Length: 63
Image (cartoon, rainbow, N blue to C red; front, side, top):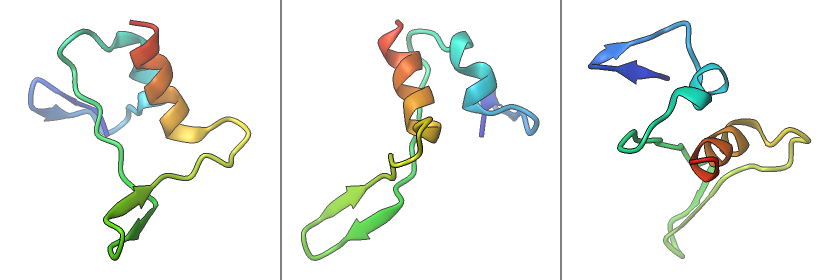
C-alpha cells in the first residue's frame, strides 16, 4: 500500500515505487507470524525473490 501526501495510490506497490523513496519516508512491514509467548514476530523470506521485504530492504540500503 502506497500513501502519498495522505492519498492511497491503489494501483501502486513497493515494487513499483521503491526507487522513489526518499529520506523521511516510512516503510511499514506486516508480520507473517507471531509468537506471543516469546513476544516475537517473523516474516517469510523463503521466496526466491524475497517478496516485499527484499523490495523494502533494497529501497533502504540503496539510500
